[in-house]
Length: 264
Ligand SMILES: Nc1ncnc2c1ncn2[C@@H]1O[C@H](COP(=O)(O)OP(=O)(O)OP(=O)(O)O)[C@@H](O)[C@H]1O
Ligand SMILES: [Mg+2]
Image (cartoon, rainbow, N blue to C red; front, side):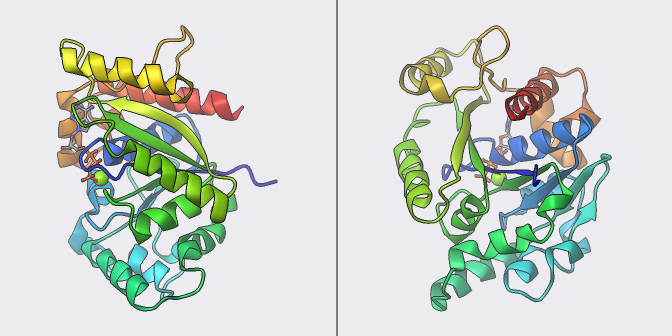
């Protein structure tokens, strides 16, 4: 039986906390003893850098896997947390998008899914960080996934674009990946003293209460705005190696715990 769960972190809006969530959720699940692979599906390669892997160190990365010159097992590397592995990215991954549009290859939405299927059974979780666009890379990530976790920054315009994302997910579910479901909406960078943030959270719960992550007290799980979370990537570390006691670390540990409970 294949117990691995594949989760894409997606929102075509930029800078909403996708990479921060992908990195820290992966690290938290690994810390709890699960074997986790983080796949960096973004040419910006922020997830790769956030785990302390420098761009110039990488010879082969996701581009080579998607274009067939390397197997995914040949690019996967261990990082500084036990049980956590990374399939890195680099800016050259943009080349895949160009080729994708040029060659109308059949089944081109399923390339990443096929590559991941070679190693899927070796992991408990595979987390995919996606770029801020609903282009070929995000479509490949969603096609390869069992579920999608959507970080939402608690600011004005937060809900803009959400309808488009939800309709893309619905379409993919109908046409390519019937298993795809929404894991949950994750409010990020929440500042409790900010009235606008409160309003956005309120609107979210009014319209999408069923999609919110709830803790054991039925409270919405949110990721607080945290300087430590913003600083940790510059040290090439997930928050749990940078500041264990920060509320950002606690929030991502809670998210990992909820996801483990949901799976049970
Ligand atoms: N909870 C938080 N508190 C404070 N800063 C945060 C938090 N989450 C993310 N950030 C910071 O906000 C910025 C954007 O976050 P991140 O890179 O995770 O977003 P993204 O959605 O992956 O962006 P992109 O769309 O460009 O890929 C980064 O500088 C990050 O360090
Ligand atoms: Mg990102």
